[in-house]
Length: 177
Image (cartoon, rainbow, N blue to C red; front, side):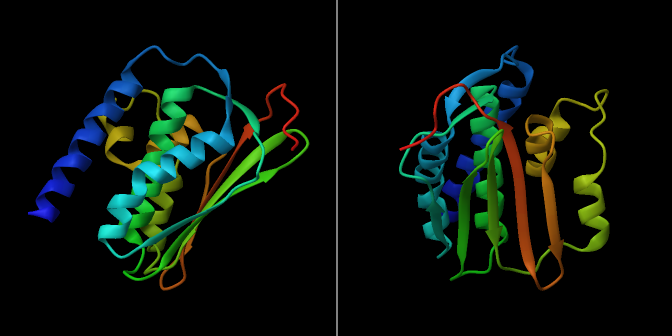
């Protein structure tokens, strides 16, 4: 029953993501990336825990201002964390880190596991086609995230696990503690 409930929850989240991609919320706004990551980790942690996955976030103790479309950034980040919690080997740890740079903030998500076959990795990192169905990015977390985070990097090899990294432009706030 818990697995069926999790499947229904994931399906509803995917449908909500389709709505996020269809809405006109392309407006770039300043957001607190530390707070956003903390909230999304808290949201995804129960599902990860059910799979015996530890979801750990290494975040700065201060706000990091970044510029992104807020609802799309939240949806894409949540999809990446859910994918990591699904793909990671049971009993392992998914690590989310934020790094503060002078012109941008970067996020890196790493997890151990089987990794991706080179052909699937190529599909996930291939070019985004604007004429593709709006459902395509909603159905694949990497494509959805790449639509929001243009510089998304996905690295993986069979048996070595997977890492996803992206950056967002710095906001005007100081970003220091």
